[in-house]
Image 1 (cartoon, rainbow, N blue to C red):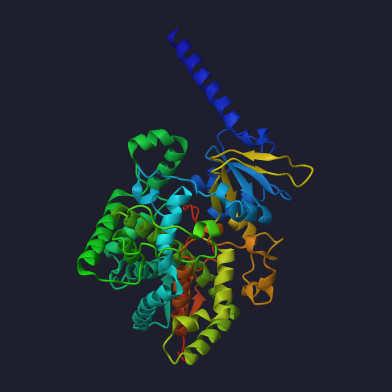
Image 2 (image 1 turned 30 degrees about the vertical axis):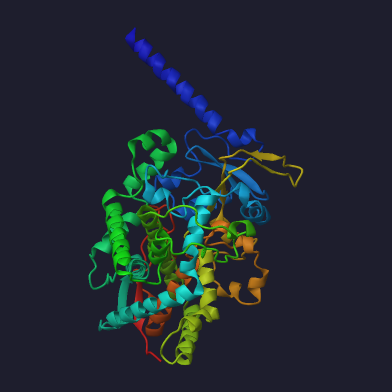
Length: 525
């Protein structure tokens, strides 16, 4: 009898779960939005979560579900998500009607993990994120970037000196290892004011903790992500943090020590932490209305109305490190690969570098680097083909209706809290916008051709008011590293180089699986 009761209980639970899942996975169908047929417990993103598919392949597959539609529905871990493919509609939602779509998905609440929940990317509510954006914007003006460029140039020159000490004709590197150490050291000096040399001291604590805090694809982090998405309230009670505790503690202590030192000694550096320290001490009152062309007039006014805490400073420092360490190093990896397998592009770029070197008399300046047109074209094409951000998300913050434009559409009423996805990677690889999208062709971005590119089909750093604030820093950093690298070396494929390069299935963001390249000495002009 007991066995019968147990079996009946199991059957009842199974039936209830089944009907719950059927209801969940038919959300978009009930809204009259196209979606794939219901597959029990198999959402549209499970292949990457189980490390069976790289994130770029997954998002390309999703993008190709439906053609000739402006939008369609998918499910991320049972979370209904509207994929918006049409560039005109993306412009409308992300810019024109931004006041209805102000937020990113808040993955980790502030009260559970302030280090994640308080950073500029994760902050919700126009007032909060706008205040912090206005606070941080002055760190990325041209004048501040020029000051930071001096530090970048000094580091790049020292790096070349270190590499040239090796008497080998070809210096073999594992790309991610090589470029992540470069970006680690550059973030250390330009943001934290810490001198680090990850080649002379490969096991320095700053680098090791940096690797740990940026490893968002570890089994632990995957467990936390799935737990929060499926059992949000339970994980909130558990107070499980997104970042590993020892790495979080390290950056909290480091940043607090830097803040204390600068407050006590009055030292000033041209970096983000300095701006936060000034704001904390209320020395920037009324000076935060820095112009930002991506913001609407409504969002370019106002002053700070709350106190800045050390916790705020730590959160912004960590998200800046996260973007600068991981995203930029991945961009450098893929750009190095493309230069290695496209030698004509590399030769043309090196010619421009040598001409610039001659023009600036052997001392590279920020202005001369900024004027390099072909360098801009190569980086733009690398960001098109290999964007680290594979999509941009928005959360509906006010009820909104997408009006129909064709006979097979009906008014789509989006409730507050609905998640939207702008499929950046898919759009960047759509032959409708970029013929032969797998071909690396910097000429797409020459003066003549780039005029014909719809700006809403190219947004590697996001779109609208919440575009990545550090994009200019990332580009200057990348330019400087490749300028000095190609001035001294030719990037060449090795026998071990996998061609074409494969993206890793073990990460949620775009990274090469394994990429070995050679730096071959050249005669410096």
